[in-house]
Image (cartoon, rainbow, N blue to C red; front, side, top):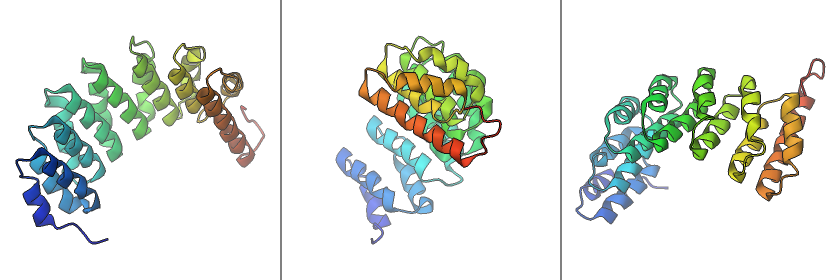
Length: 233
């Protein structure tokens, strides 16, 4: 595939037409990061929030040395909560362990649930076990989506110490929370995980039951691949 014309894209990003700018930004997916980021920055402060959101997300995908400090600045100083949430999500895409501290601050200090949700998801993406306390605390939130994000993230960081904390959601009224639990337990090989997954595999919601069955298969495969001596499963 031929590379997009960078000069033409740069001009299109300066168009007064919102659709033109949006299409140009989307076309940057085929452009190498070093060429794409300077063009992304042209619309980072765009008057259209959807374009700004796309630009922030693109910084998480098109990774250069510029991406990290820009995203941290946005998550700390941006007045619009949607853009802060986008920045938190993009930091997770970067996979840069330096993002742990700013994400943790956003999780604890930001007053908007969407930002805290994005921060929790990204903490899971980083796979850093230091996120344990923050993610477990999210389980006591009044926001169901934060429960979902924290459960998924605890599975992502393979936090065996969190199993007892997340099992209380096995009978959650929210089926998506139960599904996230079933998915997370597939990464947490303990006897309690297997027991809970057996229970969830009979869930009344088909997606929960299917997720539990897949996680049971994953745990069984992990058991076969390892020595049976001393297995917790």
